Image 1 (cartoon, one colour):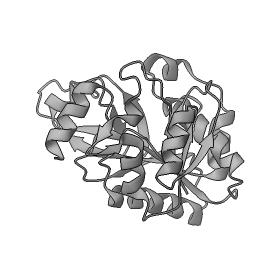
Image 2 (image 1 turned 90 degrees about the horizontal axis):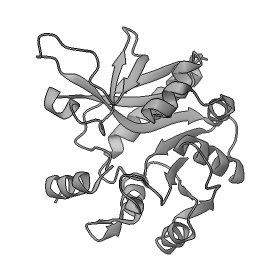
Image 3 (image 1 turned 60 degrees about the horizontal axis):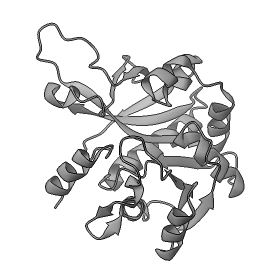
Length: 238
């Protein structure tokens, strides 16, 4: 199941999940990008978002306004939907209206692989190569991985520091794959200081010593965090 967390409040871009994307509310544009892959539900704390979801034929789940992260929100929704413990749940952010379906499919494949191998893994996410100029933007999160493809750290800062300034950086795509069981485990962990400092929910898992497997993908998509991001995206994907 794909669950899209859609919080209406946003410090950088209030109401962005309902912003117009070529004639569709952003959250609906995102849902339509991935609806052929699996069943889609939209988890929200705003009645107006739920009404929009249902108007376009998507299942809406009302959730608490007090969640610290989108993952906490989809966990509440998964419980309400009575998802089986071993079912794969993918968290696709509402601000990814141009995400390629094949990226989400890659994520599904890596979660299935971890289940088959009985791998001690909390979650799976994706990254792509980005140029240094793009890495300068703190709205675009960077990740470094180890030799086995597990995340070492995520940051809004440029990591690693490149003394010779010729490195391609790894940009994180804000989608996550879990089993229902590992999703519940993530949400039992206490929030971490790093998570609060960087405002990156995935750091909760790393802080508590959990593994995040990373899948390298090719993607032109990026999360829309500001009005400037929206203008840029609409030009690129016109």
